[in-house]
Image (cartoon, rainbow, N blue to C red; front, side, top):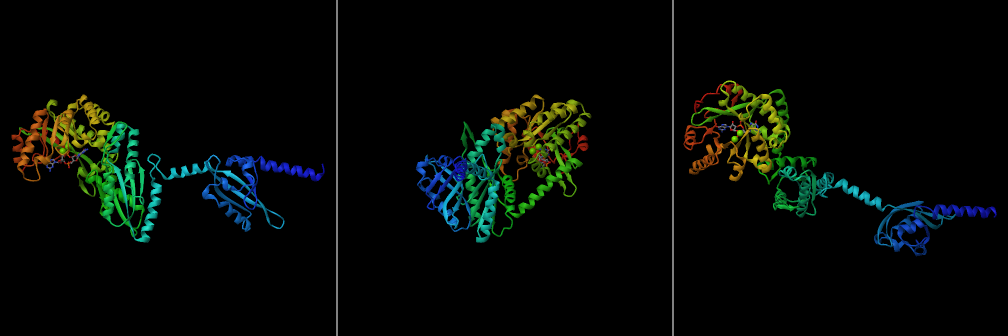
Length: 572
Ligand code: C2E
Ligand code: MG
Ligand code: MG
């Protein structure tokens, strides 16, 4: 072989290695995109044989919408703007599958710079594409419901806000929170909870306008971004529609579940400064919606913001108050209405705030309910009340020692640590179990009937009794009352001291008191303020009572002086 022949053989071998055996799909084509040579990897990628490809242009395996991309690349290469172009092109394989390829194409030129042919090397990036699409979907959507997530929502919100500023439009952010959704999870488990969330997402989607964005914020909260509104009324209509679509019960996996929600609404226009505040303000309005009535909505107003700050500082201060001893328990005597003998005391929490002065429990207890702080307060109330009851017991004979009633909050009642905590306090203090009575309100008792009954059963087995507080304000049925079987029913002061004069009032009170006889429970009238009220209750044979007529709640040492005696009525 001549040296020229050797060189040619070697060059052919190099070409075969670089081209034919290359793992990357490669092709040579002429100026009209007609294939001159293709390698095995290329045939494999598009699913055609070498014979089917050579002599034809790429149209036969190009995805219809992408025909023209190659021409564009050729134009760029011919105009000498660049030596190599890279582009993405979709192919339609012979088997019908669509694939995505990343192409890098260069032009081979003669000495004068004239293009002889094109060489391309490609990379099948179909799977990569699917994966990135999935990943970007995941990054912007909630995996459970498939709705937009907070990131996507915020992006849409900032665009919507910018558009509104340009065109003078209005928009709204609606924050929807499910009422008592935790109860569903606790009672039926997380799988059912998840299924319910998906069901809710599908229902909400039904009323989501195409211009709007529905997002799951997490947990049981959903956000709705409404664009192009012309009035506040439209935002309210939207809130009503979202609530109405959840009205029908949900049924799946053999369950029928009612799930209602509350909504906080913020309406804004381009002039409203900061879109970052919309969600926070919607949350403030949501709090108001929940406070007013379950299953409703509330529109945000700036004064709500001040109230929210107020609430926030109260909760902060409350943590501190508990540590430094600003909280204390006061005790209101419970008397036998016939003899006025003191038979027990209701423990009521008091807070002497250094700046705000005396704060009523109606204000701070519901605020603490939203955090685990309520458990600490509950522990404090029980410990202090039991300690006080011990001190009263040392004075008179044990059998006639007054009991103490302690109010329990909903959160506490659901806490699995409640019963062990009570057992521990009773054990270390040595208080006779029957001298502790726990007060629960009808609404707490109704939260989850089965769970409530099991906790109460447990308490009764320990010899601890239960009083049903604020009776008449909730909606308990008589059959439920029989099941609960509280030792005492506390008739809400509304019935003892009705806000308006009506002949019905007396009949109503009489009916309620007579329940005690029939169900063999002790009736206790709350809020007795006047002698005529007391006389009436005595006539009706109501056994027990408490109220300002006898005494307000007083500090523990003052309560001690009332033990074993009868209470004179105070001057009215
Ligand atoms: P409640 O359990 O129904 O307590 C009775 C409320 O009526 C007390 O208000 C008491 O001071 C008030 N009251 C008593 N006699 C009269 C009267 O003759 N006329 C009028 N108008 N009111 C009377 P207070 O102490 O402000 O407590 C309010 C509520 O706060 C309580 O209602 C109870 O639900 C809650 N609370 C108080 N202490 C605690 C506690 O330690 N734990 C929990 N979870 N809740 C508590
Ligand atoms: Mg009470
Ligand atoms: Mg009450």
